[in-house]
Length: 339
Image 1: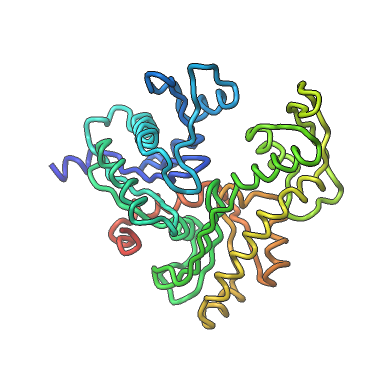
Image 2: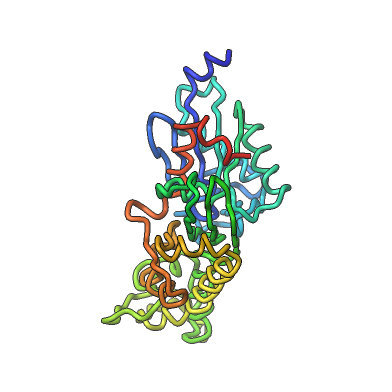
C-alpha cells in the first residue's frame, strides 16, 4: 500500500498563512493562492464560500452570513473553521486523487507553541493526510529563497506575513537565532484604519486599508508623493464619503508597525554569534512574505541596521511554499529540518 500511495498520491506543501494560504502539489507546482477566509451560515454553520469568494463577501454580509478569518497572528483562532478551510483547499487541488491520502508538509511560525503545532497536525490528519510534517516558516522561506541553509554560513531571512514577522539566522540546517513578532501585514492595515479614524473621522474597512497600503503605502516617504481615493463612512455626518489621501500620511500611519519590525530585526542581530554576524554583514538579509512588498521597507531596514538587504526577486509571497516544494522534492535530504 505504501508504494501504491506514493505512486498515485500528490504530496502537498501548505503555507497556512493568516492572510493567504498557498498550496504546492508535487509535480504540478503552486496550484492555489487564496485568502484564508471562510464564509458560513450563522445558524447552521454550513460553509458557503472559501478563499477569494469569501473575501468578496467580507464587510458585505447580511444577517444570516458571517465571514471568518480562522487564523490570527499566525495561530489557529478557530480550529473547526481552519479544518474546513484546509479540507476545501486540499479537495480542490487533489481532484481525482481524493481516494489516496497525501503526505503534507505545513509551514508554521517559529514562535508557535506545541499546542498550536499539534492543532495544525491534528487538522491535517483528520482530513485524511497519510503523513504530516511541520517546518518553521523562516526555514521554509530560506529554502524557497535558495539560501545555503546546510552550510556553515550564516543566512538571515525576514519573512513578513499577515499575522507574524519571522526573523531568523540559519546555519547548518538549523535556526541559530529567531525572533517571531506578531506585527505584520494585518497590524499595518489596523494602523491605517486607526489613522483614518483619528485624523479624518473616516471609518474604513480592512479591505480598503489593505488597498491603500498596496497602492501608496511605504516604510519611508515616497518621492514624488502619490495620492489615492478612499471610501468610508464619515463619523461626524454618518454618511458615506470619499476622501483623497497622500502617501506621506500612509507612511506616517505605518510608522509604528514598521519600527516594531526594525526593532525585531535588531534584537535578532544582537543575539547572533559574532562569526555568523560577520557572514550576514557580507551576505546581507533577505526579505520575503507579502509584507516584504511594502515599498521602501528594504531602505528602512538598511537605515536601521546598516546591513545589506535584498527583496526576494522571484515572488516574496510564495517564498515559504517554494521552500515546502524543495522539501517534498528532496524529502530524504531535508528531513532534518522537519518535525
